[in-house]
Image (cartoon, rainbow, N blue to C red; front, top):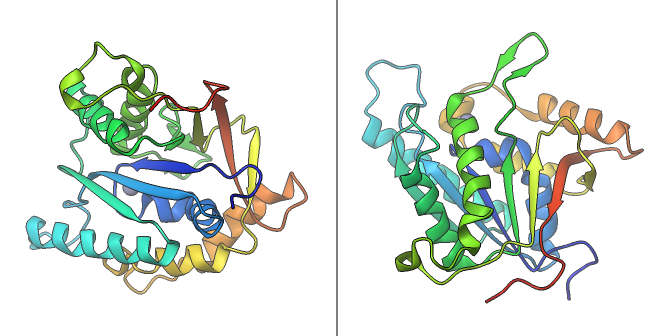
Length: 237
Ligand SMILES: [Zn+2]
């Protein structure tokens, strides 16, 4: 039995292992507990995500895939798809868009969650990674309209219409998920990405972000989205 406001199925599309846990993990944990079938799509393996110049990219990719699977298990995510693009070189190419159309048509999510591709800067101390912007742009372009166009790439599967797109990190969020009860689960999942954490404990910063987002809505902890509703009717099979 699904709770009101929880979709039947959702697909989270991000660039790197750990991106989803840093941002939308509380929503994912809440939705999977409520019966939503969630699929993750990782555009890259994070094979350049190390400051050690002697690190082996292939070994790093292996480690990071395993970390992502462990994080997904913590959050109740059933399927994880790795597209295998190289970390640091992601572009919103037609090839990537087509790969995303393939997985969208395969899993038929009601909702697609991605980041805001226009997000370049945060305050005075963060410049967004180009892979994040590329993954977000490709995700939006694949969700709408490409997946729902029967004459476009029919060889990757029959058309599927995504009903809603949730854009995380939009500066005009219009939907807030109360993640107060799943915040600890989000942090636990994030810590599975041990290769990225080192000695650093992400607990404080993650709690701070969700508290700041929740403050506007009178919630202890929240994750905010700009939600775009594309089809009022159920998705076409
Ligand atoms: Zn990232």
